[in-house]
Amino acid sequence: MLTDEQIKGFETFGLVLIREAFSPREMAAIIEANGQIWASVDANESNYPVDENGIIVAPIERNDDLRPLIEDDRIYQPMAQLLGSDFIWGGSETQRTIDSPERDHTWHSDRPGDPEELAYTRIKIMLYLQPMKKDHGALRVIPGSHRYPLHEQISFFQKEHLTNPNPTYFGMTGDEVPCFAVETVPGDMLMFNQSLYHGAYGKSPGRKYIALKFAARPSTDKHIHSLKQRSPGTFGPDESMVNNLSPRIQQMLEGIPKVAH
Image (cartoon, rainbow, N blue to C red):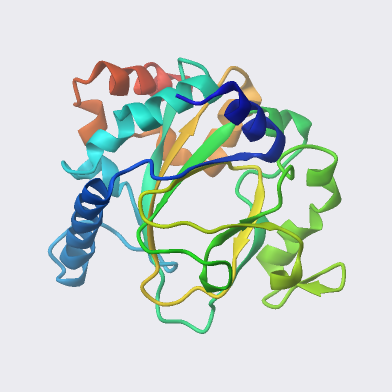
């Protein structure tokens, strides 16, 4: 459970960092399960597709050892507090940084938009599987940039991210932009609003994380359109989720495929 102060901090800054959310023993099991997924991919023994950014979609849903994370109290209860008790599942991913000269993930927002778009809250939970330091791939965020007017004032960051391989920001390089670097060790858990502007600089090959995504239940046509555009998998959950008998998981999926129509 989050405290009232943590909830206010999330609303104000756009993130909550929970130190030592998972024990070393638990993290060892998570790292092992994630490693087995990547080993099966490397051996061409799995049906996990890997995109050009080294991301596997839906690894947690399909893995018996990782799936319990979706309804773990340490994740489920904070999502109910921040998104409402009828929140929905938004999918999972795992990434392994590839050996590439592109070591920076420039400043961007996963869910940019106008005030109405920003009012529809979607959250990404990050579990990093190695220690993360500011200049070696730790997530950097611009606190409060999930809200107007700051979100609008730096909206050009998004265009630069999409079109410019070497962007500058107010005359600064990306690693010089004022920010908060979320330095973590395995076991720490980061929850952040997906409208928050964030980036990562100095990533090295082998950097791994797993991520879980959740959203408030859509209540307007614009919410549904946004999900279709940015999170299409929400309306076609993996069979492992559809067939799961857990009341918590069924609640996250309830009615969502029908909403798409």
